[in-house]
Length: 484
Image (cartoon, rainbow, N blue to C red; front, side):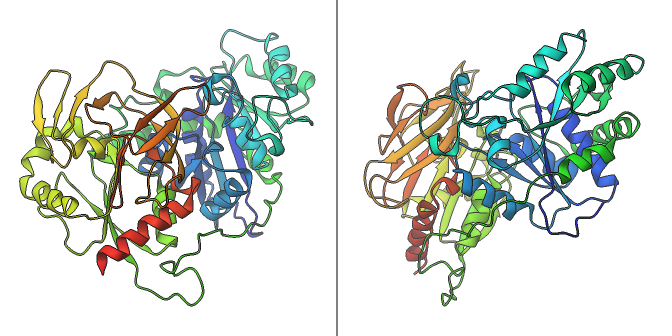
C-alpha cells in the first residue's frame, strides 16, 4: 500500500526480553511488506552496526540506527525523517527488553524511549511458549508502566515521566500453536483492549541463521534471503498484515525540524558555498565493515565525497584523497592477508605518517599498530604507524557506551570537544594513548585513551558523528587543508 501522503508511517517491533524473536519477526515482516509493494526504511534501536548490515545485505532496504543516547529528541526525529524520506513504511527493530537501557538500571536509550521520543506505535512481540493467563498481568504491567523520563529530564538520573507512556498498540505472539492461538488471542484482547495481530508457530526452520561475527559470504546471503522468504510466507498465513499496516498508519506526524549543520565554509549545503567535495577514503571490506551509515551521510552533507577502499584487496592506496577513515571490523581474522598486501599497506602507512587526516576506530586502530597477536599467540606485523602491540583477551574490553572529551586541540576541533560512541572489542593494545578523557554514561568509570592530535584521532570507540556534527566539520576542514 503506497504512501501518497508524504507521512512517515512507522512501527516498532519490541519485546519483553532478548531472545523473544525480534530479529526473526522483523526480517519476516520486512519481506512480507516488500511483497505487498511497499518501499521500506528500516532502523535498529541502539548502537549495533551488525543488524543494519544484515538488513541491508539480505533484504535490500535503506537502513540505519536510532539511538537516544547518541542524539537528543529533536535530532532523533530529524534523522528518522531524513533517512525514511520517500519510504511507504518505516520499521524499527527494538533492542533487548522494552524498557532496558543504559547499565540495565534505567530506561535511557531503551526501545521504549526511542518509541516515545519519535511517537512510534509499538507492536510487542511476546514469546508465549508455556504461558497463557499469566501473560495478562505481565503484559498489563508492561503497558501501564511509566518508566520513560520526560524530555525535560533527559540528563538526570533514572526516573519516571509525568504522563503515561503507553506506545504499545498491538501484540504479535511467537511460538504459539495454531490450535491454541484463537483462544489466547480472545483472552488477551478482552483483558488488554489492544489487538493481537497474529502469531508465529514454533518452527526450527524460522530460527535466525548462525553467522560468524556478522560476516557474510555470497552463499550465506542467498541462504538468509531464502530464510526471510520462509518467514514471510508463514506470516502471510498467520499474521493480519493489514492490521499491522493500520497500526503503523496511526503514527502521528513528526514535528518539522531544521537540518542543523555546523556553519563552515567547506559545507556546500549552505547557500553561496559552491566548493568541490573533499574526497575521504573509507575502509570497507570483509576486514573493515563496521560503519554507521549516518556518519557517511553526515560527511556527505558537509561536503565530503566518500571513496570506499579495501586494505585487503586494493593493490594501491589512492593518491587523490584528502582524508582517511579506517573503520572497525575484524582485522584479526584477516591479519595474514592484510600483512601480505604489502604495497597497499606501505603506501597507506606513508600517507598517514606524512600527516594525512586520519580517523581509526577499533579494528582500524589495531591495523595501525606495530603488530597483532591472536588467541593462538601468532604475531602478525601490521602498519607500524604506532608502537603498540595489539593482542587478544578473553573478555569484552571497556564494553558499551562511552563519551569522549578531547584533552587538546586536534582533528575534531578545540580541546574539550565531546563525542559519543560505543565500544565492542575483545582485543586491546599496549598503547591506548591519552588524548581523550573517557567516561561511561552510568557509574563512575573514567579513563584516558586515544591517540589524538591535529591529524589523528585513533582508538577503540566507534564514534557517532551526529552526536556532534561540528566535530565532523572540523575533520573535513583539516582534510581540505591537506588537499591544498
